[in-house]
Length: 171
Ligand SMILES: NC(=O)c1ccc[n+]([C@@H]2O[C@H](COP(=O)([O-])OP(=O)(O)OC[C@H]3O[C@@H](n4cnc5c(N)ncnc54)[C@H](OP(=O)(O)O)[C@@H]3O)[C@@H](O)[C@H]2O)c1
Image (cartoon, rainbow, N blue to C red; front, side, top):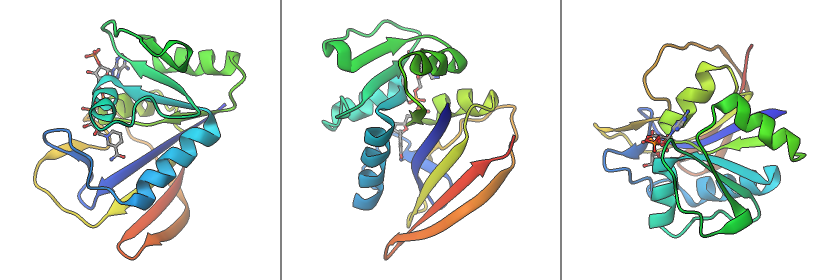
């Protein structure tokens, strides 16, 4: 089982403004995000990311099992397309494996990303670096006690102002 993280990020490391808005990432970033969730067939997100996606009409993401991680119960009105869980990352991956998935697509936000990176459960990271700097926001990984080394696999220019970084997490 491989876990892939895909994030659109400001030059100074934020994935959303302070109010949670991430509508400033490029069309190409959004397209990449949808392609990865479709190709994995699943998408794992924290509660705040789910709420933001719902607000902007992206939820549930198409052609994928949507997994929302929260300690609180969330009313599921989408039946089989959505699964809500309070399980730790390792168990979520086991659950996906048991359903026959070979790739898990981790879709943020910063708090959920921290839970996965702390357990060394991320294998690949894609970051679309968008041409913005802002003073306050939500970081790609919430603060925590972790450190991982990465190997750069590829750098791609996905539009005139946006660079995509693709990393392997060294374990
Ligand atoms: N630019 C991008 O590519 C991109 C992508 C995704 C998201 N975003 C942005 O990221 C922002 C959200 O990030 P965030 O860091 O605030 O929140 P988040 O990680 O999306 O959600 C945090 C919440 O999810 C639950 N959660 C997270 N980890 C958990 C764990 N290990 N076990 C159980 N529950 C867990 C908790 O909910 P409970 O409190 O209910 O337990 C927690 O309060 C949104 O504004 C979104 O727009 C940006």
